[in-house]
Length: 322
Image (cartoon, rainbow, N blue to C red; front, top):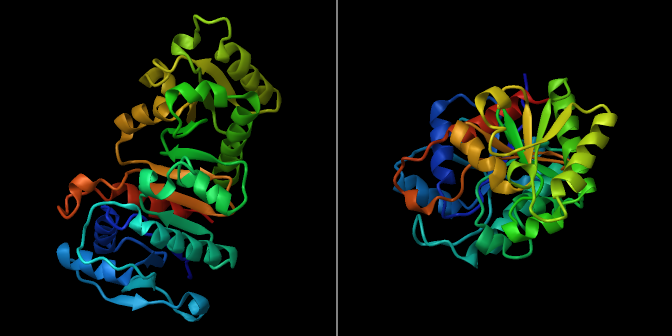
């Protein structure tokens, strides 16, 4: 039986990602061949620092179909990046390297080599700056997709924020019925396509208790009409609910997905409930893109104590999807 390869863009070079990838190789539980897109120089430096040994097989991306791939060695597409130490301070000097890694991955995805991509964490401040709110938006721009959304997935409960990395005072200006509708439709279509059922979706209000002291209440004027309209089109959607109680056990157990109006409204309780047992899926792209639910975590660099569970979940998820 042949398995589709999974492309892995290592992302920020000074992060815990390669450490947790090394731990994945040690488990020997991965069936699909992994193709790492990263720097050979960096890989050698961090393998030595973390005392990890494994053969590295350099892959020519232009002849990738000629290779018989497995995970007996690290299949590496080498992207040049010169760094003297295994770990350094995160700066924008790695921006071109990260962009080159993504460009190679996107080329391979476009050629149909695979439809699966995992990327390691990215420094939003340095790599994305003010141009993109997150990697989700960066990849959407690269693939010319205007409709996309972030789904933090766990088989027991998933969450999705309508707005992502916006300052709190900018959220209400960004919200509208069309934005809410298009993102929830993507979630509904994803569950229908890959799991064979329409998910039960709860939608939170923007304001505490879905109430506002101002004349214009976004929950009445924007969120509720969007919910009602989607309901008319056959989606199993309910709300708006107060965000401070929807995550209570008796409430959340009724739903497959909880959609919030902004990032921390749903990600904070999600991470409290499941910690590393969740993955970040971008819906709306022409391929399946997942990132583990953690950041570069510079405080843990070189300590060899980082938890690989989220990355393993990401790989396992892509192995099960056709």
